[in-house]
Length: 144
Image 1 (cartoon, rainbow, N blue to C red):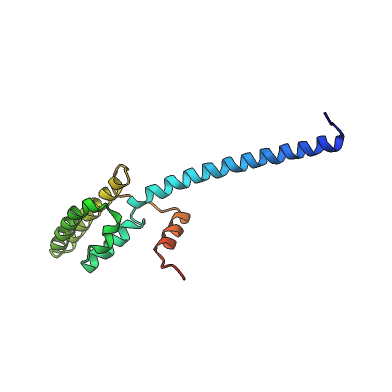
Image 2: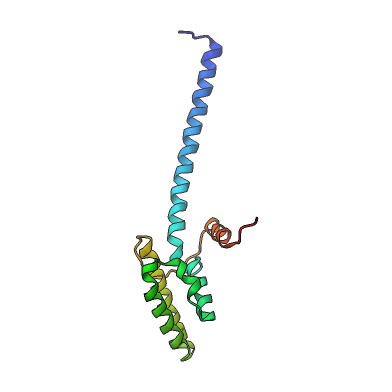
């Protein structure tokens, strides 16, 4: 086996580089895992993508924009909840607040069920900046 000082030094450097690569790869895997959990869990927050769009739909009286957040089989339930919310909203500010909350909870519950995730209520938590940027990018029209 060849064992000159020059080659031994190179192997040591290669080993160090290999360990650095493995350590960096481990950091990337952990970061991706954590960010995936953040991204998955943000649809039930008040600042996630679902709720602001649902509030806008209630304001316009058009359920169509929120149907993309649920499975096709849940459309009838969402349309019914939306129609009831619109009727109740007309009865005053307190009624509007209750109607909106009921509709939002129904929408997010069905959305989470469609993802196979549990529903634990609406959360008033901040969305991680990277997740908010990703949401904004997804919502933006593509540039040709």
